[in-house]
Structures are given as C-alpha cells and as structure tokens.
Image 1 (cartoon, rainbow, N blue to C red):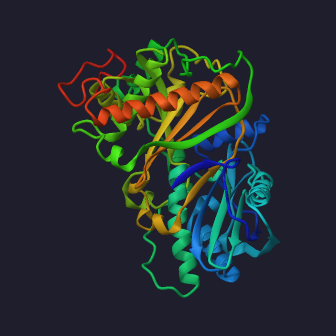
Image 2: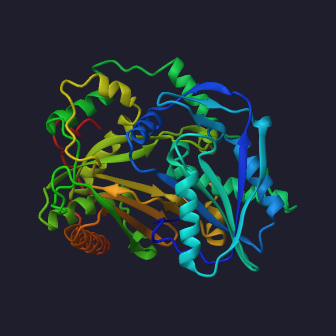
Amino acid sequence: MRVTAADLWEPAPGRVLTWQVTGGGPGREVPLSLNQRNHLAAAAAGEPAVWLAVSFEVDGPIDAGAAQRAFAALVARHGVLQTEAVSPTYAVRRERASFAWSPGLDRETTDVASTRELLAGLFDEGCRSWGYPGFVPAAISRPDRSQLVIGMDHFYTDAFSLSVIVDDLGRLYDEERGIPGPDLPPASCFVAGARAESEDPVRMWPDDERLRYWHDFLAHSGHRMPSFPIDLGVAPGERHAQATYVGALADAATTERLARPPATTSAVVLSALAGAIGDLGGPAELDILMPMHTRSGPRELRAVGWYTTTVPVTLGADVTATSLALRAARRAREVPLEQVFASLSAPLTQERRDVFMASYLDYRRLPGHAHSAVRRPEHISSPTLADDLQLWVSRTDAGLGLRVRYPATGTAQRVVGDLVAAWSARLARCVLGEGADNPGGAEAEPRTGVVGRA
C-alpha cells in the first residue's frame, strides 16, 4: 500500500466512471463508536471534511456492470457502509434490500492533473459526514490497466480497512467478471460491535495497571496532550493549510536488518525517531500519541470500520526502553477512552487542535498483501488544516514509507526535511550497529511510572 495525499496523488487519465446509490426506508437506529461521535462533533463545529480513498489496479478496461455489482456486494457485506449519521450521537442503518444502484458520471480526462482534480472534487462533495451515502464509488477505465477507486468519509473507515476493501472489492469484481477465486472469509460487523459495546461497555477497576498507565502518563505531562517539541513556525491559535511529505524512509534491504530480538522493527524505527528529534535539538524523551487497531480474531481482521484507539507512549533513543514502552502501550489500548476521560484527576490541556502522533502499520500482515504487487494499491487522504506534525510509517515489501502531515510554513518545511534526513540516517546506522542506543542488550529501565509497567 502506498500512502499519499490527494494533492500528491497521480492517477493516470482515462474514462472516469462513478456510481450512485440510494437507500430507501426509515432504517434502524444504531449507536456510534467514540471515534465516530468525535468525528461528527468536529464536522458539526465546521471542521473541514476528512475523507480517505483507496485505489487499486485491475486488468483491461472497466466492465461497468461488473464494477457496479461488485461495489453493491461490498456495501452489502459491511454494515458500516449501510449507515447514515443523523445526529452527533447516533446513526441509522438502511436495509440492504432497499438500496438502488445506478451509473453516475462518465467523463474522459486527458492528464494526471485533471484526473486528480475531478476525483478529489467528487470526494470533497460526496464523502460527507451527513446524509447517505458518505462515500463515492468510482473507476478510471483504460484499455490495458484500469483502477477501481472508492472515497469515504472517515466516519466509515480506518487505514487498516482500506486493505480489507482492496482485497474484498478485487475478489468481488473478479467474481462478477466470471473469474474464479476463493470465497471471501466471514467478516465481523462494525455496527453490531458498536451496539454490543454500547449495551455492555467494558469497565476497568481504578487500580487496573492499564488505566493507571494513562493516568501516570498524563500526570507526568501536566495533563497536556503531546505536541511536536520543535518550533514549526505556528503561533498559538494559528492554523495553516496542510502540507504533506511522502517518501521513502528506508529501503527493503535496510528494513530487513533493523529488527534485533527482542527489539522489533517498529521499536527500532520509533526509537530512531526519538533519537532524530533529539539530534535536531528536541528532548531526550519524546511523548507521543499512537493510533492502534483494536481488531481481534479472524472475523474482525476482515471487517471494515473505525477499529482504532489511541494510546500515549514515551519514546527514547534507547531501543530496549522503547520496546518496553510499546509493550505497555499495546496493553493500554484495551482501556475504553471514555473511561480514561471520565476518570481524569484534572482537565486535559490541548494547546493545538492537532496532536503530535506517529503511526506504524505493517501492510505485509494485512489482507490482500499477496496481490499488492499486481494491484498496486494506494491510500489517499484529503488535505485539511494543520497546526502540528503527524507521521505515518508504512512497511511494505519495498521497505519503509513515510507520510508527514504538517502546517504549510517555511519553518515546518525545513524541520520536516531535517527530520526525514536525520531519521533515515539513524536507521542506516542501526544496520551497521551504530546510532541505536542499547540495541537489544540488557533491559534498560523506562521512565518511572509512565512506561515501567511492562
């Protein structure tokens, strides 16, 4: 999976097709997850739309009838794609049998820029948080290799789900064209899971170490949410248009040699991030938020939805300490965030709208990876506004890819360039046995009370 942004996406021109779907009937009221409620609250407050799109290649020109049926089968398979948000607190799930599908746009494009502008405009308009559908099924037909594309409001999906959609939609499209293949495995329903959590929420005892992990982290930080520790040229209260960096962080040969048990590749990569920020004048210990998926079991691994929580973690240039920190953070993802917020000893302070975060996702472990070299999937995100820096590391067969979201200031652009160079250099030195403190040796003590409960 190549992770990029809409303004950097380079879809080759062709015949752009879209499909329309309407869902009749009143529908059944369903609860929302915390992520969905927060997303809708931001939309209601006037925040820019946030959409995700995924694109992948198929052989030959698009069979429009087969593509429409494949998109319809995808929506029928995943309950979250059948829902419509009607308030900031609940949605309705439309009856699958009531959906009506029909062809939409049919327009030729002549270059990359016009193709990108057309599709991004369709997603900006159609991937909305309110009304149904909040997604846009599309395709770019060409004589030799075409693309199936679907853009979705963030309400419906997370990054992991995009890989599920590529695999599901690719198989469904082949089936509709009469190309035999294995049946799709069973998938959980995100909507049913959200209802179950609403009716029987998880509750942890106040002395549970996973809840204490959160409390200790926030107490140590003065109940301030993490922010990037180097000046980005953004004054308090300012927000800027988002700029995006997309590039390689390490090639395949370097990446394969990073893991040194007991340290995992992700621990080495994140430890090198902390060291690189230290090289630029940042702190010795780096507080950061990390999104982590909450899927468990084979059925949820095949589900589409926003199965993501956020955990805080303190990173350092010492790889072993970072490994312990990540281990504790992974356990903390089991804590419902509602309980974290409800049990705080002091109000949270957030100096910026955004928070400093880093994501690490190994796409080799996700559904459909075996076909990725042929399908060439891309994850495309909408640009919005930014006042902090956020990082997405993606591991594929090509190595480590990096996307950075940051405010479009000259200062931030220079900082991002310096950070990428320092981070890449540290990873290269790790392969040579340099640049990573205590790589896989005796366990170092993490910061007391924050990452020490392993």
